[in-house]
Image (cartoon, rainbow, N blue to C red; front, side, top):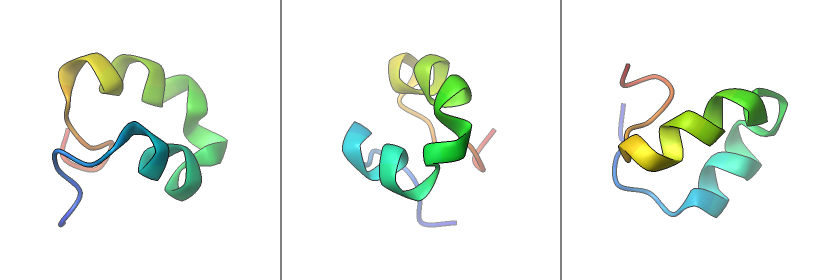
Length: 35
């Protein structure tokens, strides 16, 4: 997936329902699908 090093805002829009998971992803700088 092309979901790497993307602005935090992008995750919020793409994965708004997964906001809880985004919190930890933001620090790691990895996408939710990247694992």
